[in-house]
Image (tube, rainbow, N blue to C red; front, side, top):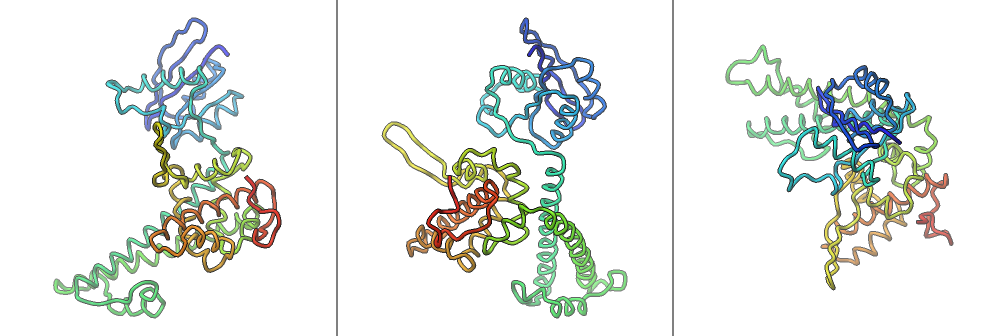
Length: 353
């Protein structure tokens, strides 16, 4: 290897460090963050390796480098080696040079970047959850309007049944037709229209996700687990992608941030809260489903009970353990291509590290 191009990606402009290994020399070049500009850079300098940081532009840069048969490394900027807290100077050129030198010494913390189809699938899954959050915000706004007018509304799902929404529509009036004393009715009408539009968008996205899941055998495999529905199954498959990239179950738990922080010094050794690293949506959905597993999955209910030990103060600790065990089971099934087998009924557990 003779030449490395390390790039600090920016929204509009990026800085490339052209690092010559022989002679230990480097120079910098500023270019527009556009595919054509990067293509011209790679073709002109013919690097042996391209190094970039993970970010929203990393996908198409990776695709471009692979199309030109250039080795590419994607750096994990959340790693401790990439902390600038105590650094007195930080510039785009410093970032690019640091990428090149860490890559040369094989000390660069890397992340696995999936292919374009998986990235777009992940994006659509996240977009669906974004729409759900918007819907929740609209519902909260409607409740706020009613609270200001001194109107009580049923809590939870009972406040959004077909009958309840029809009652809201009867209270609402087009905003152009209300007087100054009833502006809240116009605001309610606008929010109800936004809620209906949001519901239609969510249904469109979910129909597409169902079509994608129907053609994916790995999603069907995970849905054989009692209590696992389509949303969790597709998210786990999309995020794990290649199960062989994890060496053992500990790495899988750490990938989702479901392992405890570790503090060790001399004779002192203790564990704290979970690290919280990795994909927040994956971790949140695993914990949400973990609460439901007590009802639908006898094996995971036993995991919850064993950790909880009848102490209500340990319920949150127990559900984290269930979420981690559930993810490990999913990973083991994807790795081995096997359907769910209840470990309580098997001599060999399904979750083999």
